[in-house]
Structure formats: C-alpha cells, structure tokens
Image (cartoon, rainbow, N blue to C red; front, top):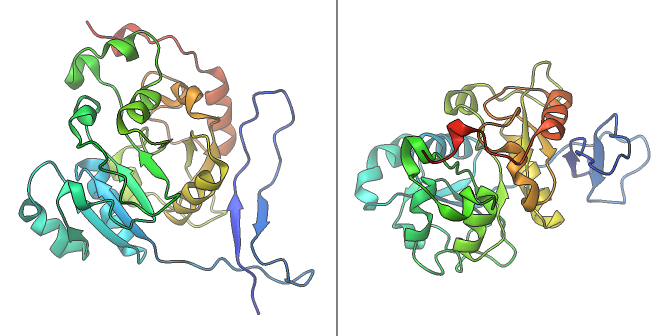
Length: 264
C-alpha cells in the first residue's frame, strides 16, 4: 500500500526565521507505516482557462497532456479555438462557461482586459476552487495607464479586486516556450522554480501541486499584497532560477516600479 502526499517546496520567510533546507512532505494519509515509500497519486481535475494566448494556450497543452479535463475560452467564440481543441482534446467554450464546476480556474488575459470580464464570471466554479492569474501590467507596450497600479496597488491585488475573488499569482514570469518544454521531474538538476503569491493556504496547496506536476518547483512568495515581488522589472521576473536563487531574488525586490515599467 502506498501513501498519498503532496510536496511543498521551501517557503520564502520574511520574518527572519531560517528557510527550510529540505522539502516538507504533507502526508494526506496518516496511516502510512514508518519507512514506507510514499508515492504521489495524480488526480484528474476539471480546469477552466480564460484566455488562450501564449500562457493560456501553453497551459491548455500541458494540463491536457497530464490528463486533466480542460475547458478553454478566449474573448471570441469557441469556434475560433477549434484547432487548439482538436490538438489537445480540451473543450472550447464561451468565456462565461469556462469556470463552470471547475476545480481550478486560470485567468490569462491582458491586464487591461480584466475589467471587461463579465461580473460573476467565476461564481460557477466549485466552492473553494482556487483562481490563478498570470497577468502582467505592460503600460508602455500594451495596457496603457492603470492609475491604481501606478499609485502602488500590486497588479494581482488590482486583478483580484476586479474579479471579486481571491487569486494566486503564478506563471507570470516564465517564457511560454520554457513553460511548454522545460518542466522536469521532481528532484532533477536544473529544475526551474516558480514563485506563487496568494493568501489562502488551502488554495495555495492546490496551486503548489499543479506547479509541481507541470515540472517546476513551487516557491511560496508570500501573501497577495506582496505579489509585487514577482512583477515585471523585479529580480525574479523572466529568470529561470532554482529555488534558492528565486528566494533570494524575491527578498531583493523593491515595490518601486522602474521607469520602463511605468506609464510614459
């Protein structure tokens, strides 16, 4: 008999306490005998994805490969996603239906388009289902000026306020081709670490498990209020760091936006 478990990577600690030197195994079945080998059991989830661009489309491909049931949408009709659906086996749906009965929802759209999502678009997800947002604020390249973010509101806090639900920030700083091709088994040398910011520990555990399943080391980047640590222009953004370097980069980050990441 094997024991289910989830692996949680070393957490980023801002209070000065020492960082764990090894992974913590959170055993879900406490009946396991001492010394028994623990194997992760993979569970198929129903995942709704709103946005089918570089990151949303890549996550559709990766998550269907892993056996998850994916319902994907864009800002147009399901018919415009027919090629992606045929390629992956995902179900193309209207955006308003993507979150229906989902165990996990991923919102991956341009920052400026967040207010355009229909009110209550996430209400049909299963109770407690976490919502991931992968967005970045690109004021000079795409999004124009968003006053609240310019005045210091973290990008993901702004997204959460508009969506009306708690969110977890992850996948915003990895190149889509690396997300597609560079996932590695747990413990492999050179495995890329991805920071995850969010508040609810139960939801964060689910997000950690998905990141790990995709082949990346999840690193706890703190609460959503500190998600600025992984925004564009910070030391961790766009880097393929391992766990230790990711933690160091998050600690070095400043909440001040650099000129290239402010509205002109």
